Image (cartoon, rainbow over all chains, first blue to last red):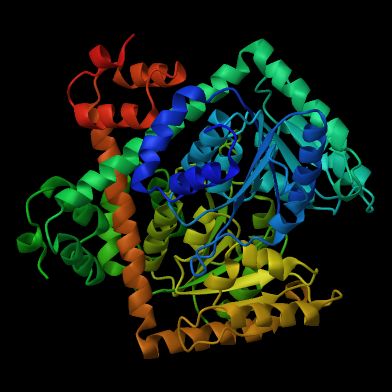
Length: 312
Length: 312
């Protein structure tokens, strides 16, 4: 897999689209993965995540490290593709073979987003990228799961009052290993940092790691060095205390769970008798059956046609 | 179920916690549900959704309608409960028996959020509430699914530049039936409305309904009447063109799908041999097996112990 950007792009696309070839690629790639450190950058829309990722990439490249970037964009069910606006900014790295950038659409594949991200990371990892940056909007359940795909996660906020409160509500306070108040040349940055620190004190002490809160102005490159340093510190801390293995095991377990779930559904659909599904939905709509009854009947009947019992 | 707030609160809690009694409640309630109109209010954090829901509730109460409110809050995996800050504002309705308010935590129950919301709506619906308002953060995949639980959905944005672009990225443009630029006494409201209108023109014409874009200042009660009117118009439009039945059927189908999925997983877990799961995870961690191999082995083996094959 090593080296060639075009072959890599094709492999990633096959994996992302879950085409038949994907399983073979993933199986070939999996034993070779595990070497890369995966770093997440998450936060509310407009916090400046893309700019921060762009600057982090430049920094890592200066240090001679290869960087894979996976940007997870929420997708419109209509357009069916990631909106690439922010990615255009990253084109400074487009000709650098040491950088690979992929925008991933969320696609509405229920619960599968974290698995898909992890699979794409595997491909980049096996291709030899030393650092993988995952950029994702940090609001929403599936998106938080994606953030947890990383070994270390930065939560990016802006100084505007209330952002820290919103971050708490969004469950972001619990997943951050490092916090960044970006656009810190705006008013209220110190206050925001204070609010985040206060909120972090409420957080259950999951480990001895005390998440630092940094000020940054990513657009001017300020604070990016410090963020990179804090990531390294956190990764070193995790390695020292066994946290890296623990996090990775949890992730693999979650991934296995979702693959099994998906497989069970495929089997179920294959065994479903013609018209059985529709008949149960008809019964639901007419309120002749309850959802639990319909689900039990479909699951229990499996290979046998349900039509007779459920009516049409 | 009719009338008693305390009994209702208990029933909703049982359903929300998926306790054993839940299935009986849901089955009792389902045939009586379907009468309420369900309206969704969604948008990015800080857009003023709670205030808008509060004002809408007052308006509906003045019209003599009973109102059930389901507020879906992203939950911290640590605290395990919804953060109730915004709900406190709603306490003006706390003593009104014609209003029932429930904050629902997202809980990390994968993919189940929309189903849980729909179930709680059923209980409120059967209890005789005429309007149900669902308030949810409109960023994130699961949250968009929740928004689609409603018959009609308002997307709430603020005037700040970029909000419309972020809304597009978040997939909000496709799910809105009505758009509200809230906090419209701030600078840029007209520009934001224009941007939303432009974005709506890009939207595939799914139906003849052209989503209106309103200006509002919910905190002062401005624009709330118009929002209520637009909701009624949209619901009338849906009824006239069969869209209401179509939306509700799709929702029931999605709900059935998730219930079956959940049931398949429970069956799978029940059949799983002691230690089989752990053995496969061990193999994954050691990279002796790929996720697809492990999943296939677990799904295929079902009742038979996998330990022998998976090592350890």
